[in-house]
Length: 190
Image: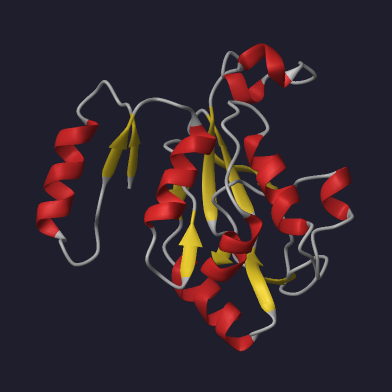
């Protein structure tokens, strides 16, 4: 777990989690550099076969790892397992669903469809660690860093497998959130 310079009780909560689960939970604290740099710090520290990105406004759904690891094990050519993303608008769950509804109905690769539409939350895909190593580092941007990283992954042309059940619930706050602002130049938010 990467703490991106939290100013609340996050460090204490993380310390308690690490004490309770020393075999599976590690944390590191970095200076606030935005989501891309926090994800990159986590990617660099990860030890497992798979890499999961998760933001503070996202919630992994209960069967995510079981379903996605099983799908990747069944499909050794796939470097990514994707699935539907639930969108939670101010506490109204499942008001919108992004992503493919049925297994293996999505595109087998992210290019060229990624250029037209990104239909999942950042935390929805589960990646093979070997693929994230090939793709390289996340950018230190505060907007569109997820799309840029996924384009770096997609340029490697990995196969994608799918689950048919939602994998992630993403909380969408009111429009004042930086990532909800559309049609702005991302350089304005560096």
